[in-house]
Image (cartoon, helix red, strand yellow):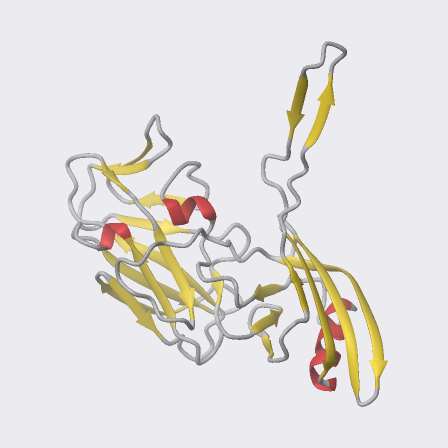
Length: 266
């Protein structure tokens, strides 16, 4: 995607002015403890929250008003979706690599989803009614934008007889429309009223353990079959933790800081 989109799911707004500063570093939460003997013990958060900091100069007034409304929670306490130009794969990191943990990856129907000693996820014993689901950690799926193409492909759909499917849901989690199955790549426009997309893979009959492999879910930008799969961003639900607003009529300078939220009630 060429621009930043931000807002509650279903009400995402495009901010066309590029941020003059853009930092989305992960707060690792690493701490060191040194013993008297000189040994060092390192601890870290199991799943460190993602943070984002954005700054604009000469921001258009209508965009500044939108960001101010988000910071002041005018639209309610629901967490925000942030689709930034650097997010070229929306699934979680482990989903994008096909490795453990199985968080967000589930097998529905016949078969076994297993973790191998090296962390690779495999499926076996499946039938043509089996589906591999890629779930979001917070919402029913990944936020979509009207008029922006959604593309999905997986390693399983590239020569293993599997096929890609996409389900589109409204704000309340009601299914609107399904697309696919198609292999090796599925690209579609969200139907009217779609707020979230939920990617699935229709599996063939697999009698031997078959690696799940990588998965790629992208909005807007083109997808080439067989391209290296970027590490997944996850598109976490986020909340504004701070902002500054410096009017310079007829424009405004603004900064916005956000942090990933988990298990928040929308």
